[in-house]
Amino acid sequence: MDEETPEILELEHAAEWRERKADAQSAKAARQLRKLADDLRREPNAKLLDELHCVCNWLSESDGISDFMLRAQDYREMFGFGEWAATGDDYLRALIGMAQETFGMG
Image (cartoon, rainbow, N blue to C red):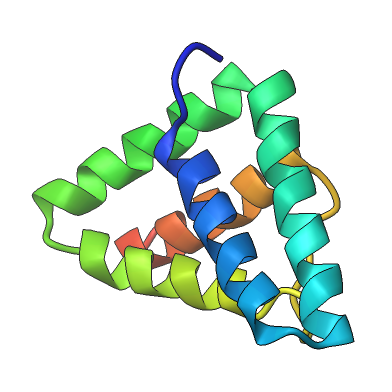
């Protein structure tokens, strides 16, 4: 990927936040968040990214984007404490599901 997508940057920021927590569970969550960012960097699933961006565009037009962004932030913050995504694709699918629910499609 030539430039960092917002999804990668958000994962990296969440990992940095977790690393500052300095406990074992947060360290494990930070490693997983970085792994997801690396997955998206190495092998981005264009179809899933396009789907996420389309739903986010609808949310932007309907003023629902801030609700989605808060849900996505909460999701990243809960990694290691009940939430988890094994791969970058799983992470994108989770975001798509949240975006669709926010839009009233899920």
